Image 1: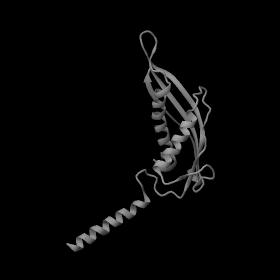
Image 2: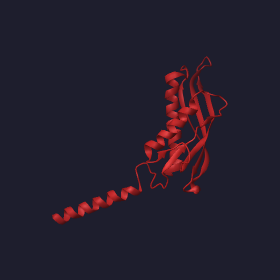
Image 3: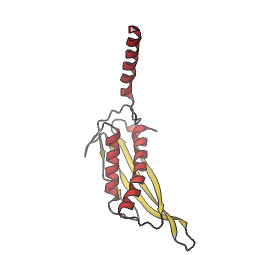
Length: 167
């Protein structure tokens, strides 16, 4: 019985020790220690004030929450930069009296990612997502915040997966 306990303890120690190579976010072992997210400019034809600041913060938050990397303002091992290239509201369905019963907000972000430790991982790519909302809703205040949070959560997760998780 004592041998079984020793074997179980050794197996558990081996399994726990091997987890240091991979974590639940899928990032595996990263040589980088720091990251920086440069301010994403709003270059969309339809300008919604403040969305670039919110996006930049969301991008910083997802990396801080899902990795052990330290945020820095310059000289980061991993660098995220780019611009918001599209902010578009389109009617999706109409009522009998030709009013929009549902609208769609689509946001597109162009991202340039640089990994100073592994330049083969560098890329420039556009990420886009949308959210449909009721045509009678005005896209201001809490409704705008709700829609932006939904879209930014998807876009930042896609950027994270492309740059660090490799999914």
